[in-house]
Image: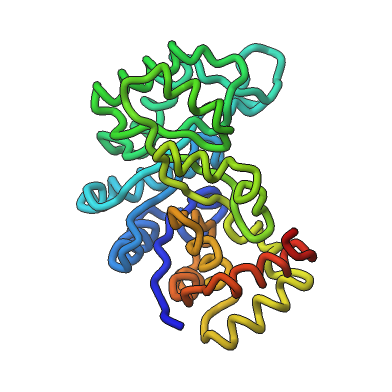
Length: 286
């Protein structure tokens, strides 16, 4: 069975919690080491540490300016947390209005200290979204050079199609929850829809928040990983990569040794793929 290298997007959700990486020089060293490994995509969002993740990353880029041209940035907005709700209701909600998204893009650029975001995603679908107005705002952000491309996260097919129908630019990316522990998109048609519509799939929580290592699935992953000479995590990512479109995992670990272990994985045969699925769901396919 041949081996391959799994490409990864590095999730920055917990960067603000990693005290050892908070000094700009140390974080710059970490970023440069990842770039030297060929890992150049970094996934942010405005709610990660209430902007702290982007600010820490930006401070490191300013400390070492040569890095800015080498990194590729994904960031997301549209979730308003209770502490950021200026309405007085202190309620968590979604906001896809042009004013909110425009301010969010400008704030992300300022925190990160970059001239353009490679991908800007709507973090969650807003039922109150005016698709024409939101689509125009995203088109305008591309035309202004603030974002290279727009995409979505956690959208259902008709939600992204309504937005796409109001845009001139193509939506390029869909970031969705997908893992051995959350395989429903493979069977409910939503994964097929994103492929049909030409969206690049990014899989968040590709290890199920660590739950893939528990119970029977964890035991099967460990045994199979030993036989293939890789880590259980790498095998779980190989399961994802076996899907059509080869979704790219967005991994949350910041530990270099763990990232190394996640990158090398076997190419799974269809029976091996289904065996892992069966272990995850505790029942065979119909």
